[in-house]
Length: 239
Image (tube, rainbow, N blue to C red):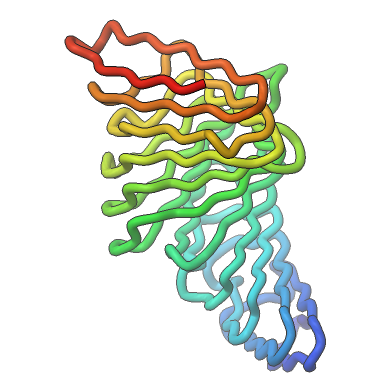
């Protein structure tokens, strides 16, 4: 990308398009063409920094500093690296989202489109073990299943919540440790971490619904639960 209005066209190979806040605008157009193409956008400061994309399969946002909507970009794989605290990124159900390198103590929000019933998220190096963790909030009025894959470097979440209250299933897998320390979606009735090969940790103040099912995988797992807020809990635990 340049400081002018760009109309970029890819080749039959796998092309990469790179720009930052000084060169990007919605007036820019990218036609990826054949191959598996990637747009890497740095220091995105506003929705107006998102170019118009077609046939670009991978979209990477680095150091996002403002709320953005990526659901209409056409990209099927979205990577968000170092999202600024409390910003909201909108995705769609046909997009797989990878989150990486979020500093400890941040609150990150992902929202889905109004009709989406599932969300797929990959986490890598989210929060740290030594200090305050990261709170991840998934917002979607109809999302009832959240699929989370932990890969690369271990991730530590203060909580994984769903503001919509519709979520019923949390499915966790991956080869990196995932720790959820204090808060889990209160409406959740099923936690399936059977495909985890690394450790899965649920902390002592994790809240589940009256009827809860927790399945862990082959890693070194820890499940600590406080059932006292539930009058007549029914818990199924498979470890």
